[in-house]
Length: 136
Image (cartoon, rainbow, N blue to C red; front, side, top):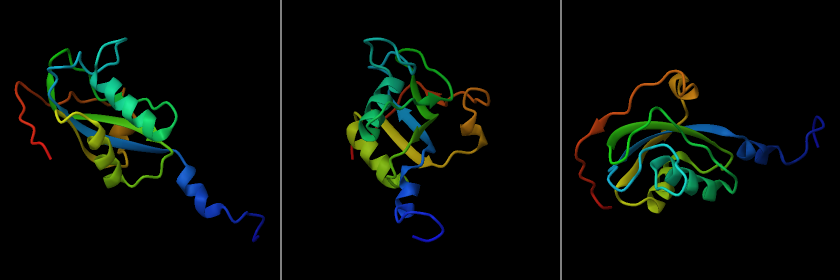
């Protein structure tokens, strides 16, 4: 041991909480909006279920805005915190593999100031009346 630190220092970074920003596109037809609602399918609820399963602990996903039932979005920005050290690109692929084909996660990244203060520095999501999703 050097300087009173254990040999486990390399593993310490993998256990640190990190904030992650994502962009989400979805066909809102089968969903009751963004925000979690008891016993109803929502985009936030779907993402939280998937991320909680990956993390092994509850994960809260904060959105940049909310959508109503049936509303589609092209660029809904959201953020959450994870301890899981999965690389960003692998996180995107893993989440998309568990999502229905009408919901896609793009561009996971470290947050900007905008993302850190999602509730206070918000911009509305870019929405559209119709989406076409390609199946991978």
